[in-house]
Length: 301
Image (cartoon, rainbow, N blue to C red; front, side, top):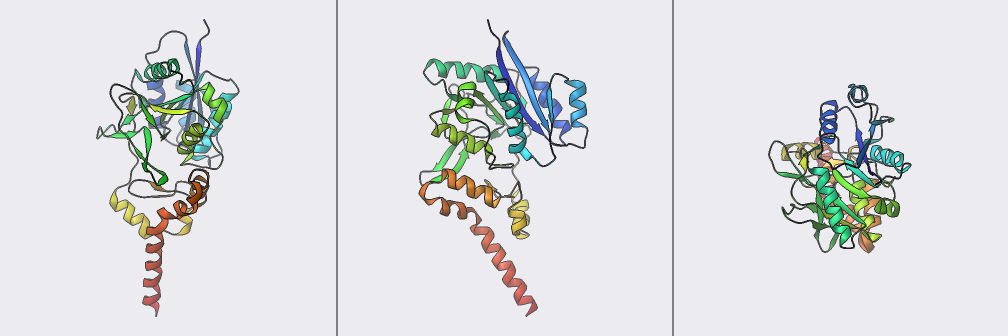
């Protein structure tokens, strides 16, 4: 019997204290015999000794050195490309700050097997996570928020008993079968940090694949959402250089993405009115920048 080969894709930058526990939890998965894991880790020129620690503690990890400017999507794209050479049965996307529960990978595989037996052999399976401090759901499957807004999504809670159909996904814990990877390919080069996971799920669905969220919660991952005070401070000082940086600016429920990358996302997935959806998140920033400019003009006049 041939083993089931799973390529585990990760990328990291200066998060040694998170990356090592992530790998430790990966190697503590409760798996049946015949499943072979091969992690591909892109270390994006970390200066905190992450790469050296991984080489020492987990020499079997396929370590790829980055340039220092890859960010999440760029790093994951590089890991994906390296894994595609081996043509594994599955690709597991895993954020380096996600700590999987021991049953996580088995659950993802079981859900895929169940879906495949029902004719859903091109199904992506997403694992939901909880914030380790608050125990509040942090990442997982996404649903379109409004029928009229094709590029606005919200995180949904998992069902404890059955998989749920999703519109797209967070990339923190995702199982992608070979059939989907063959059809959809790699992450898009249009994106640097954010949006690559959202885009992948949407492209997959457009090509006849499906996105499902596994039952229950499969691990922990801190929710990287800024406080309202941080949001106001960032927006009050905002300028176009900050807007167009790879990680964008934070808003209360989304990130104000890089201007050009958000444009590419809306053009790809926003339909006939993509231009309107592209500019919609920036209305608050436009107003704050205008009032800041008017205040300055009045102070010098």
